[in-house]
Amino acid sequence: MFTRFLVLKINMTENKEKRYKWRREDYKEKTKGLLMVNTGDGKGKTTAALGVLIRATGRELNCCLIQFMKSKTDRYGEHESLEKLGVEIHTMGDGFTWDTNDKAQDIKTSEETWALCLEKMRSEEYDLLVFDEIVYVLDYKFLDVEKILGEIREIREKQPHLHIIMTGRNAPPELIEAADLVTEMKEIKHPFHAGIYAQQGIEF
Image 1 (cartoon, rainbow, N blue to C red):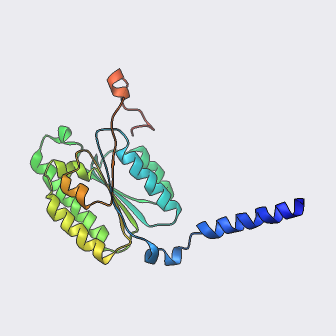
Image 2 (image 1 turned 60 degrees about the vertical axis):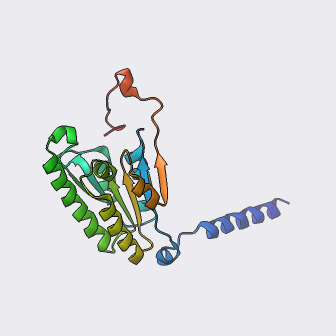
């Protein structure tokens, strides 16, 4: 009886391993790339994108993180973690708009950052690209949403396996319509309102 149970357990384990076995060599042919948007006024938009990035890296997908607004002179916890995992990171911003108070400079930085996004997408070297804070840029109209979506659409037609995640508040209707997956983070309660400010390891 025990022997039969052991054989059954081994067979179930083998079947499970076969069912979920990762076959990297045929990944692209069996994958539908997704355009994913994390938006809303709640905390967690970038955090959720980083979670997918780590998961994808664990599956040996080639990933890249490009940050639009975080200052290129700052270091965040995700930089330390992702560099240890070998993930490519580009932090391109001058700080948020309330830091620069220079709309012309913000537009210039946004255009330069988008040019880098295009370069990475067109290289055909990546499985997952995260464009962190780009939705803010579109909301502020530093970049034209129709132009951006047109360029993404053209690239995705040539690379149907490519996944893209975009984060930031106030996603424009055009972006929501174009996306395959949209998640809205809703603030219900936030420690800031209780006088608890950003903390290392939680916010940065």
